[in-house]
Length: 501
Ligand code: FRU
Image (cartoon, rainbow, N blue to C red; front, side, top):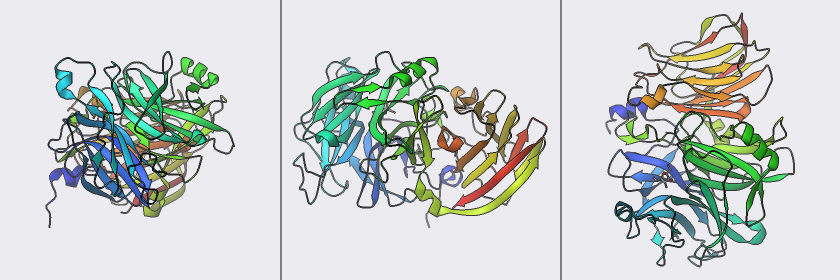
């Protein structure tokens, strides 16, 4: 029997993907093909801190059990392999395969660190590689790079999509604090189309890892284009985070809706996640369950402290996959919301259900030894809320606790991990609680969260506001309390599921 390391026992998540060994950051090149989800990732196979980047690879049939595969892409004469995407070239437009066996084509950034060290500005270019065996082995294109550097220092993270209307490929990449759009018929020759980002959105950091997809609005026939842009730093609670824009695309240029743009100037609350630990997330190619949903996954960390978190065997975990949808908000603006991936349902077992419970002051609502709180889905509803604070507290017998909840007096959600366990590896980890404004105005609230040893993923108001954060308690949290600062509150529809793999 293999002996598990201390890290593995305490911190290795159950259902979230983490590499067997060493450093991981962004998800890359995700696609769904022949019943399998393929996840590639920024990987440093020789160390548990960031270094020369490779593409690691993992496969899953259900988004719960992941099997790590051999490394997919290694650094080459053009540099290391930074973030990018992959497509199934069904029509064999590239000519790398056949219609019967379409090639998988990966499009990524080559980062030439030797050139960077010499002081050059043009060390990031875009290259392609293809696989004829479902992503197991790859051949780099002989005429790489396919997009040369036009003189921009940060020029990376190409995302390629198929633009059905004109039967062509569109590539979007990050260029300093803008994004650029290109088109191609064969994935090899690319023509510049337009750029986006001047004077709109957050510009407190470098733009990275863009994504671009069309969604049918929930309960409507309207279609809209959504543009994701990760930014580091500049996040709503510090460090790295992902903003989004909604608008139209004519095959050449993305134009955000004018009311969206106007609202963005007033409040910048168009973030895919308000917690500190969801970065560089992008969507799966070839996943078409519904036209009103895309499948998305991010890296569950933050560049402020990613290399300092207290795991050693490996460092880096992905978020759970999420289905993103568009809805029309009360201010008549299209916004994104996130749902827990549907496959999870099959792996949950109900442990606790309580119809109604009255809470005064502080009460333990999950007792020790009733639920495995390092592996659970919890759902709670409130109605007729008072204008005051509702705090959940996860805790253990060592004095560690994680607090999170909602203050209906100021209409803000919060997470406070200052007492959550190991926190002093970085000043940025818990210096102040993370906060998010509530985006709807009602006196009832639905809360759903997923716990997996070192993470909480909170979906408020059915995914209208999401907060994802990691934590490192000295021993697992075993109990949960609810603290209420008003007169008394009623817990409605309280349900706890354990997640069984
Ligand atoms: C985002 C990022 C990307 C880059 C990669 C390098 O986290 O900085 O822009 O391609 O990580 O590992």
